[in-house]
Image (cartoon, rainbow, N blue to C red; front, side, top):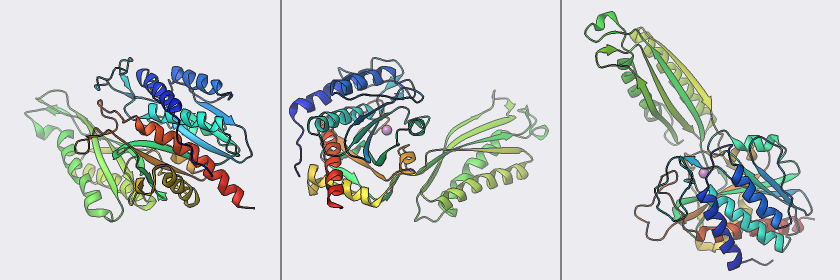
Length: 391
Ligand code: NI
């Protein structure tokens, strides 16, 4: 088997595409121009893009013996104003590729160039998915039939935690289950000078915020990571008015179903108890978020083998604990085996104070495009070879 180094011509094309995508970010389920650019590139390679789902995904097959190996990139940008000052900074007010999805698309197109030029002996499906950040685009794409005929699926995310040339691969749970909650506190409004005639929603909210901190620190087994974050609190109208209502919004992260259940019921229990304690009514609403990403063993081994070939043994990083982030790639892995990896993309000189994902100043070292394109290309060839080895 041969390992394709990415020719400069293909790498340059990846850089060009990444910068064009970066300059024209589109938010979840609005990826119209993005899809047009991807489709044009794939058509230029002789592929036939098609997508019948909601929003503007792009799905295209490189024909070959099945079952198909699917490779997935996400397409959406984040709300926010870019502050990188790059010559190809976002030209769209209120949107920015701050999560590196521009890079994911560009490297997958790079892999399409490599695989198209030297067919790997197995069918490949390229999936460009809308709305990863918000709205669970993966489910939409699956509903549109993108996993039909697929034997395994792979995806990757850039990360600033590692330098270019490092690839993180792990088996099992690699991201957390993410849920959101909203708690509404209903007391009784009144005059700021006459608290005895009112039930103060602000004071109850204060107790509630403190109480909820003890769920993770005092109730959950510390060897299983979990997080409860209250990210938003809203209450009151004026300094001399006792607030009748308050609203808290937060995020719950967990990696085990029973810890998740414990946190959900703990939040409900504390809200109920504080309502009783203060004579108020508290209601809790929990919205289910993305499930954990669980990499399957054989596919994680395949990805690891691929990483060793592409970046060498020294570039392979094994994750020994899950990230508490979340990723809708999880929905694909609920249906077919596969593996999600992380690609180091930290620019040189930023070891001490790197700029994290989702920051307005986020940028990547474009060298990761070379690594990503080679990784996806090689992954498919490894999968084809593994299949040939099994009679
Ligand atoms: Ni992302």
